[in-house]
Image 1 (cartoon, rainbow, N blue to C red):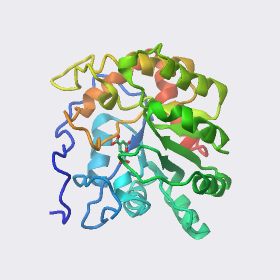
Image 2: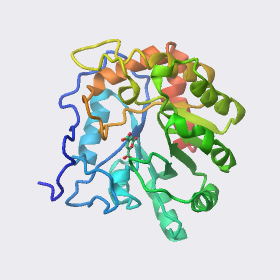
Image 3: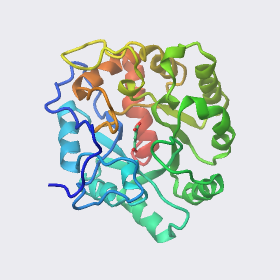
Image 4: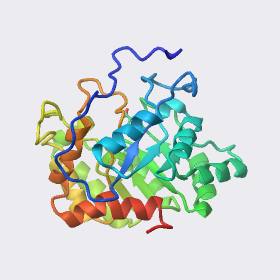
Length: 305
Ligand SMILES: O=C(O)c1cc(C(=O)O)oc(=O)c1
């Protein structure tokens, strides 16, 4: 039993996900997933904006094996703030099959960065989604980016599409590879040819250090249908967005389940069916291999690539 009480209305992850019909290429990486707690062992951060269900490393690794992934990239969730203990514990237990993205503050010591590196951390996450975090000054983020660059790490950014005009100069000034979470959260009701999405594509075109995760259709979709009850064409309104990014930037895209899907309000997707979604956004075997194997390996396991 956790000592933490979940946020009211919290949805736990989908139990007994189906086995994907889509055959993942050998060595596929789930490049965006989280661990939560367990809160008893790894307490949630006092400054958190939500309290999740516990979702530990054993459950994540079981899902990895069930879906047919070879490796995970575990991304520090905001409910743990800059306390990376749950992340590090999961990385150390993964036997080399997981790498991580941490959250650090300005005061982080060189020794701590080295310790995180040894555990498998290869990036830091900067979050600009107001419902998830308090504001961090840009000069602090820039200072952190300069500190992690010599380690060969990159920066992961999470923001919403309406905020890109205001953030893009800052992103462009970052001295590392920059990975955008969930395609910069486009408003899919505006359409794939909207000015808003055009700005995101232009931003990627103009800066070849910007990558994108083509993940989270379950968060972006307005029309559904959800990945439930065997649905083979879920989240149809998101497909044109993800497909466009994959086809235009095949060498700079990543995919992840986003398990255990924090803060979803309406439904919890069947992760097996989410994997089936990949075939709709990356229609050829070559695109699939780049998205699921070559790109994440280049970024997270460069020594093996
Ligand atoms: O949209 C979200 O609520 C969300 C939250 C977090 C986090 O709390 O870290 O991570 C994600 O990738 C997505």
